[in-house]
Length: 195
Image 1 (cartoon, rainbow, N blue to C red):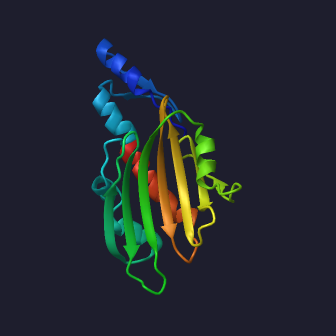
Image 2 (cartoon, rainbow, N blue to C red; image 1 turned 180 degrees about the vertical axis):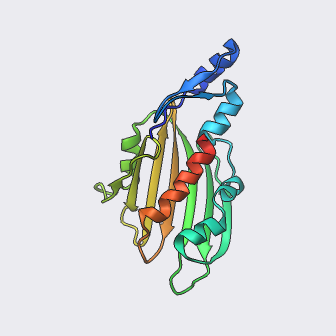
């Protein structure tokens, strides 16, 4: 399902006029709050912290998907204007076959095609091999990340008029993860952010 998001400026205009805006996509329309602050937080997660992200994707949820025991969970915030980034990393207890699952939500200014943004995530000198993933954000891709061994990413991009949101589910593992393992994490974050 592709999601169209109304720009914050239009939300502010709608709030001044006392209207609500419509969000289109998928199988119908739904009302989006006309209050700018509510629209910002609910739609793009710009004010999210790493701790909030870890609550969205708790250790047990990740452990069940990957059949591992989580030894540690580390939230992190790296907000440097104009970019905001919230991260949650879960590390497995197994020292023989260590696995780390990281979820990152970042907001980037500027307009860029979602498909181009996904492609850049997998690009070194040339585009790496990845698969397009349907039904997540405006564009999504899954595969090994550039030339880094044992590192895999599901990248989900949602476009806004003057910004875009990236949700990256990264897995460091000797055993390549499956889309079936990482997709539910991205879906859970998207549902929490976009409802």
